[in-house]
Amino acid sequence: MATVPGMAEARGMSIPRMLLQPAWLVVEGLLAVLVLVYLFSSGWFGGGFGAALAGTELFEVKRMDIELTLEESGELRARRNVEVRSEVEGESVILFMAPESSRVTKGDVVVELASDALTERMESEEIELRKIRADVESARQELEITRNENASLISKAQIDLDVAELELRQYLEGEYVKALQTAEIDIEQTRQEIERKEEEIRKNEPLRERGFVTALKLKELHFDLYKLRRTLEKNELTLQILQTYDRPKTEKQKTSAVEQARQELERARQRAASRDVQATALVEERQAQLAVRETRFERLRRAIEKCRILAPGDGVVQYPTDEGRNRWNQSRLAVGERVYEGQTILTLPDVTQMIVNARIHEADRHKVREGLPCIVRVPAVPGRAFHGTISRIAQFADSANSWLNPELKEHTTEILLDETDAPVSPGDSASITILIDTIEGAIAVPVQCVYTRGSRSFVFVASGSSVKPVQVEIGRSNVRMVEILSGVDVGDRVVQGATESLLARLPNVGAGSPGSVNGSEGGAPANGGGRRGGGGGGPRRG
Image 1 (tube, rainbow, N blue to C red):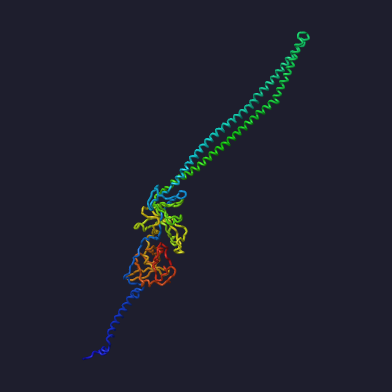
Image 2: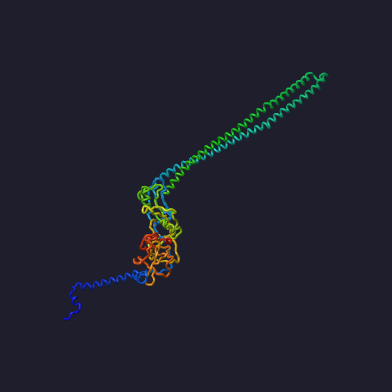
């Protein structure tokens, strides 16, 4: 048999070597294919930094309105929250309590306290009150009698003074003038009679010598003249006594009587004033006692009324929490328990208008202001959104939650909700979306399209069948979209969720340098994945 060339060598080879040689060829071929695929996908062929688009999700750049929001959490409380306290002095026992969480209207009885002891005290006080009222009336009548007597005494003293003054005037202007005139008339009359007697004697003396008149007759005429002269002396003495003694004496007596009457009038007025003051003081004392008794009686009456505590307004009955009760060292309020004056028994929150208490981080304080609209969702009322506005922001930050984070600084914020009839309750938790601003007509891409290296931001722009990284300048953003200020335009297509191979092709501008998000060298999304990072911050500039 003829031998084929090389047959001898073939025969000389072992069987395993013949089997392994084709297998190595297959492995080498597969490796070559994988290397080619890697080179194409890494951009070694056909387009520099381009990349294959197979399996890549793209987003077409377009203009849209971006709503800038801030997400927070908070707790509901009523805007109007009326505390109902015990106003009864001392301690009282609860007889009735409205069920907690029950709705009441203004004027409904919500709590009733025991009033037996107060009623007994009020009855005793009423008896004393009647006695004091009788004493007051008696004092008033005594005051009236005293004033009448005073008026009579003063009137009598005034009359005595008037009489004394009249008697003085009567003497000086009447009796004395009359006596003076009488004395003067008597003197003048006596003088005239003396002149007539003297004239008669002169006429009778010649007749006596002639014997026509007897000596006895002449002697009688002389005696009559003598009597007239003595009468004249008596009348002149009477005038002298009247002028020198009677007038001064009588005038002094009458003047003294007037002065005494005037002093008696003044004493009567003083005594009247003193008696009036005493009687008035007695009335005022009785009235003061009456006022004290009436005040005490009225206080007891009001205390009895306050034992029936009425709802001051519409609301939902809420009893104190454990914290509020511990302040009074009391167990949970219930019928039969004791309450004290000033102790809060219940509160009536008006749930028609609620406030959400929230806390804004100091890094976000500059983004919000009073009056911004908010959307509030309450887990207790699923599927419903409530609307409100920021009504108050604390000017100073506090560290109320520093036990969680010593560096945490927050501003207490209140959001006033629109009136609602939803079944919400104080203490319900709430999630808040604060509508900060709206960027109208902005060129925007999703946050997962933007990546950072150092202080620079990039997107991957698709061109034909390849993509390449393009540096962009970004503006404000929310949790979904980022405003693009420059670098791409409307209609460009950018990659969402770049692969590791694409991220490896980002320029190396200094890993961990200022401005990189989370210090990510491989190019983290511009949003950073954090809630506060997407809350409407300013543009990220290099």
